[in-house]
Length: 184
Length: 319
Image (cartoon, rainbow over all chains, first blue to last red):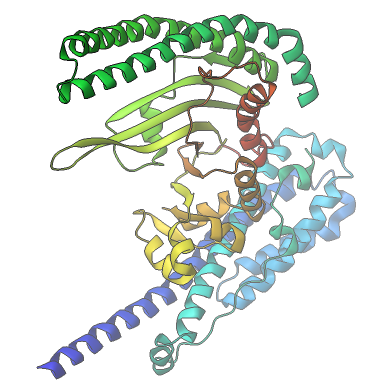
């Protein structure tokens, strides 16, 4: 009788650990798709932003072309998560340069449609930052689960591997501020 | 903004006169209360005599007279107390509020509505008693806010008695966040983590609210608060690293338990205080700059929340 009870408890614990691991792995995937959604929003805004400024910023052709190129790359199908992150980081850096360059063009900064676009862009940047942090929290919970006892035993059997957290760019560690970025 | 030195000069030039003029009423109420206490003691002595059957002929009428006197004094004082409190609020509290910002509106008798309190979802326990006063409506730069003192209670029924249990007592505040939230996010004080340690605490924290637990990166914040939300990403969108630091800082400034919620397009904040706020003292003089300073600092909390949460910078935009 006692053997049956003990086996019963073992099975229940096994199921609970297994479900917890699967839930945590799914949460990581879900969190990554959260970033993806926000990144797509950002990509959708870029063409409008570029078309609004390109006439006035004809001297910055190279920078604008680079942004357009990176956007096209980022939107191409079949990219792995790592590739997506890499291109996105390059795009973030190019957009950072863009924002600094805009400072030299007061006529652009005072354009109402540009200001609205920048506000939307800033909003999406904050959302991306939040989505990245959500992803990292999900990855940390997942890594903790597969590396701590007793769930590590089952994770080993299921060959669950440790996942990497995303590097949060320095400027995102600070609060994204429309004022600081665009000084509008 | 206004400094303590300027408040001191307001106190010297205006408030001191007002407080001095209120002293007579306070002393008269206090003397009535002292008389009632003495009558109560006398009634107690008489009751002792009656129970021991000593001096019955004197003790019984004296006890009845003492009790009648207590009722008379208390009835007579109640209207005086009401008037005294109303005068104090009009002559002193209102002036402090207007000193901070003349555009703020002050309603001594009104409070944050029940609907607003429920809307915040800060306290899930339903209340049986709801009272409050000292409502302030105002705007700091672009951000409108509302704030009042509140006290909510529920009636706990046991076999042989009923008692009132406080759900919340203190300052209740809400302000425009300039953002329509899709989800709901709640920041409460972390009790379980403190008692049980972070790992076991996390386990129990999941069940303190029905929304999902949100684990954040700031260890100091995680130690002081527990966050629940219906939307993990939105919770982090609101609670940026800087906002987390500011909330920690705010908690240090007020030095008492504080909880927040982000619902609809507003931020709600409830700051717990044990004592009643913005009320005059009866048994000691109110001619005291420290009391005025304390009220001033409590009203300034409105400004501190808005500044700390960076609500005026409008980094968030309404869709």
